Image (cartoon, rainbow, N blue to C red; front, side):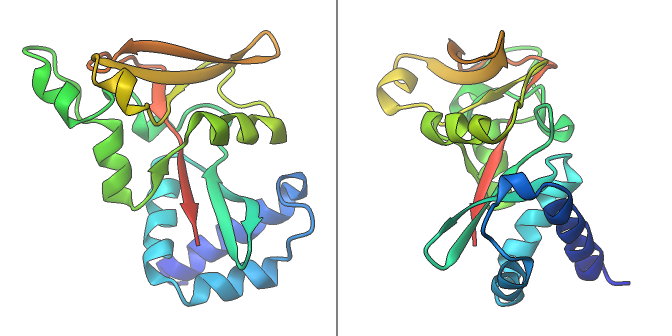
Length: 177
């Protein structure tokens, strides 16, 4: 079985196992859309390889939205600061990379606060971890960055210095195909 076929099989099994994430969406339609988007398959493979467990969470017209649906922030994308500027600003104990640049390299986008909250409406995520979210320019220009998690049955948005990094903080991605 090819890498592509293996990925498709994994995505299909996850799609069928979690129907509550994509009510009213048929796998055959998702598969048809994926078939003509080779770059999307590369991005989905990168999401899968880093522990994101991507799944369809919405439909936007003819396009499908995939998000990382791992219960906790993807394990292969933790311990990173927010962006390249934050990474450059660290003088010592630099993390291995930054969330914004890694997302771009993978061909995905960080979730906005609104998208993160919408994902949390589907099921509970980040109950033991947290995830960087796309930070508005006015906050970032002051040196900060935003992250979210779910605790006590609520979704919280917090701030931290963009150069900070923690073993339990990663990032979730979104891909529209």
